Length: 176
Image 1 (spheres, rainbow, N blue to C red):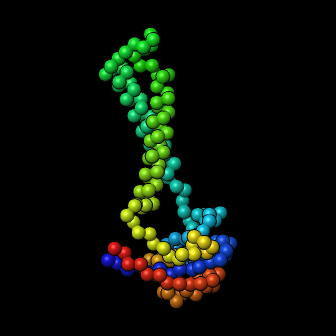
Image 2 (cartoon, helix red, strand yellow):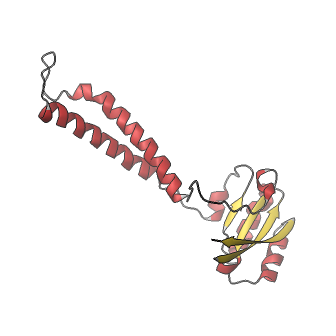
């Protein structure tokens, strides 16, 4: 069992938060996460997040759905049980389009959802870390992991207060 220690900067307004993120990152501090009760425009750019690769996963799962649908239909209609229906060929591609479309969309959607759950580490048995109850109401919170930064608590406290934090708190989590 390990003990994770965080220092939290609580901010009232999103403009002050964005400026504070720039200042804290400029000081060389690694920010664990920023929590907000609503989406803040431009926060991902300021935090240095790269574009998500979830669209690539969706394309790959869609391609898998298309390949699977074609393989199943061609295999069944052309090789396993070839039937001439209404004078058509053994492999009538135009009639395959609805099944191909449906399997492509189905596998892309499910694959993208499961990929998101895996990447985000969302599992039903996980106990979430709640840094501050007000992050779902009206406050923005910047969480900084003390173990992953070179500054001590006093300097981080001063840096957060100088950057516009209305409160600076510490939070400990016992990780199991």
